[in-house]
Image 1: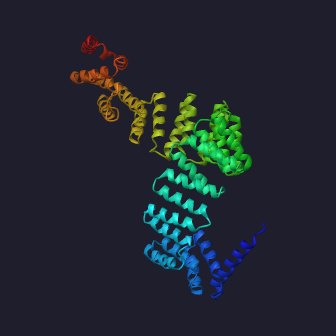
Image 2: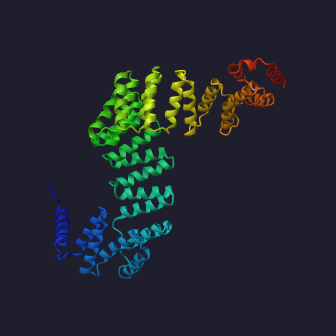
Image 3: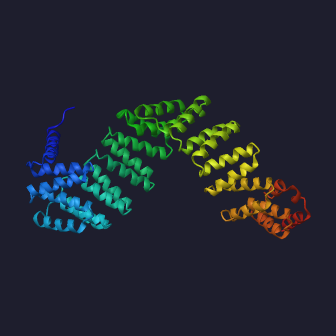
Length: 465
């Protein structure tokens, strides 16, 4: 690999500077060399070395505007904004047409959350700069800070008009379109950008993502194909392409595409899981299980992996094996509502009702407030003869579902069973009001209550109404 003369000079300057630090000899550098050295250390996070280089640079070149602007940058970095501002005012008196002065003023106002003021200074910088793309990009970021996505989008587009290779600006433009739910507009913009820059793999990739969001999977696949043809090591594009092939039910091709991502980089738990899903959908259960096992080995904390392998056995009525895997998952994370829900469902199928009740209770405790979880829990409590607990749980559920007929009919049945007829009538009336058609739920869950005279009288009165 050959370095350009500029890169060679830069490397020599760095080596010379670091040698000087080791030997304590004072060597001469011109001011631009010092600027490059300082910016190198800033870019690599070596702030102390950057400050040391700045100190030596200012000793050798006390009047160098470029070094003083770097000094401003370091002062801003250290939140010494007033000192930075005073220095900038001094520089402005000397070089009022230096765009970097306005950029740093904007930086100070941005640090103070005065983003509108920062934009004003950046617009002044546009009058003096040769690097329009950089300034437009900075303006776009300020608008993002102000949550003005439309103006941010406009600024990043102007940046791309100046520099089509600015991938960061391209990503930011698409982010604005996404945030504004303007997917069709994003497609139009990206197609126009690609017409001018047909070999932009990033643009093709982003176009594919927009088509995918719009469920235009054939168009998405075409875009991802172009992205991967232009750059055959574009990991993100291969992943998106594989996901699209899944949507198109081209599972073998999706598996091959996920395989490419594993060749480009270490296998990710996401890719391993998706390959397992593809094999399962193809009916190759042996290979599906193999990849599910690999997934949980690769990332034991990935709940989707444990859920995939547990659901695999649930679907095939292999409840003992499903229980084995969900117990392993709970051993890793016993506060996961998805694991507890499955633990409950599996134990219910195995007629382990006490364990099922624990599962439903834990699922709700850790945030599963779906109606079916509440109802299964309540029905399990009733099955265990825990009438009072079932009532308390139903009343708790009404806080989340205040107008739910399935809760009202169950409450009615439980109150009638305890001879609390007034409460039973109240909740039966609520259930009939909310959904008369399904009043047979009372007969299904409480056949003895259904046959009682008081219930039949309430039903008869309701029919008359």
